[in-house]
Every structure is written in C-alpha cells, then in structure tokens.
Length: 318
Image 1 (spheres, one colour):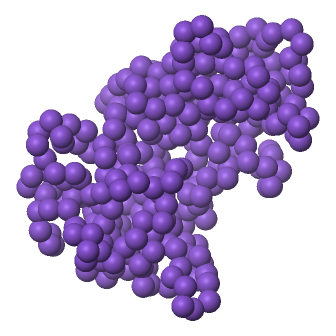
Image 2: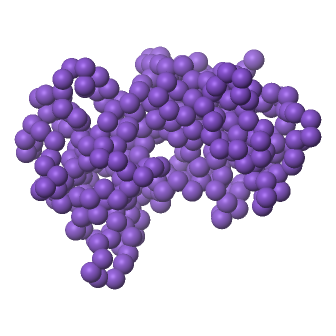
Image 3: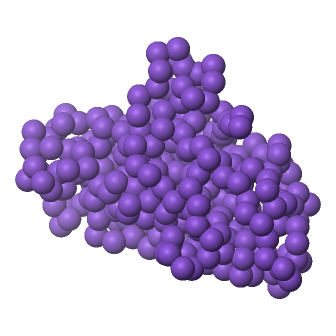
C-alpha cells in the first residue's frame, strides 16, 4: 500500500535575570489564553508543539498582523521588539524561540489590548524536569531586550490538537480555499481537498489529518525526504476511535465503544505539523447524512496518545 504525504502549511497572517521562574508579583504579563483551552497556572505543552499565547501587558502597539516569511535560517526571533525565551533546567538554559506571527486586539483606552504570539516549543523541551528535580520550565517574554514577565510550562509527552481553519494562530491552511470562509473545518484531507459537505469521504477511503502536539520524534534519515519513510515519526503510539453518532464529541479510545484502529502512517511533516493517515471502516446502516445545520458531522475520528486526545469531526457519504 502506498502512503502519500504533503509538505503542509503555508504560514501567512500568523541575559538571564535569575535561575528561577519569574515572581508573579513582579510579572507585567497576564496570560489571557493559550492555544486551545482556558489557561491554568501552568501551560501544558509537548515537545515541538505549536501554540499561540494570548497575553495582556505588552506595551508595543501592533497595528496589523505580523506574519513573517521564514528565511534560510528560519523565522525571526524578534517581532516588533517582542522576543520569547525558553528557560529550563537547574542551570537556567536559555533558548531564543522563533516567532511565527503576532497580532493585537484593538480597543479604546483604558482597556489593555490582548497580544497573540504564535511560536513552536523546541523539541529539546525537558519532559523529565520533575524527575530530575529541576524547576518548572517557563517562557520569558521580553520587550526590546528587557524581560516583562513569563508563563510557566508543564511539559507533557503529547498534547494533541487537530488543526482547524478557525485556529487563532495566524497560520493559513492552503487547502482551506476548498471550504467557505465562515466554516470551521478540521484539517482532514479527502483526495486533494479538505473534507466538507462538498467533498465527502466514503467507506474504505484513506484520509489524512494534520495535527499539532504529538510530541517527541525520531531523527530524519540523512537524505530526507525523497519518500515518506524518511520522515521523522512520533516516538509514541497513537490509537484511533471511529464514532458514527451525529455531531459526536471527541472520545478517547475505550474498548467496547465505537470502532478502534491504528494509523496507517504517522509522521512529522515540518512547521510543527504532524500527519496521520487512516482508512475509513465500513459505515453502519442507516447513517444519517450531513446537512450542515442539524447534522454538521456524521463521523468523529478521535486520535488518542498516552497523555491526550482530540478529534476530527467529518462528513461521510452514507
């Protein structure tokens, strides 16, 4: 069986102070949100994960979305005076991070605008910091070279997120041209276009889904990448669950519930993105069709790892 892959997303309109995490009392930064969930005191992240921080406290004004094009050396490490460092380990190792995008909400004084910053967590994130007795790693946020605060991190093995066209990352999915602009579609490829009411999947089809947060990966082969087999692979195993209930939410793989399977192919395809290919099982009799209003999906495919799960809600032809 031949496995195909796509080199994926175009990115568009996306001195050490001390050895300890920043004192929250002197922190000018307030975490307004991060990525896909309501924030907690520390932010769950996996090695290599793409996230978007939403913070209050940035004084710089961003009039329009900053979405730099990467050079041969990668993305810039400073946008409009803003830079972010990963601080980790007892020796407080500092890693300057590439920034993918930045934007700012606009409001009338005296409100504080929220600034969104898209970045990728390095694969060198130490997931075993607690075992080693190290302090929590953290992101130090700087303006014009001066630290203005930080965000604590809690490294996890995986923090799976199925990419969709409404993610607030300023990352543009080129295949999104196949669905209406006001529709939030998961990044599930059926042939050469995203799955939608206008591009239904059929039983037995092989589909591809794009994700963030599958964690650590193997090394690429030296002459990568003339074939999919040379791509880096997630070091952990992931399982699939197929749920044919209309508009079903994500549901982790549990024996006896839904139809379970494993990916045909899983690999890191660059820019923080992973691709998982899978085959659709036979559909149950009487499966209702998607209508885009009452039934927005008639198959939910959940991808489950050791620490997390997320799902793609798709439409199939009964």
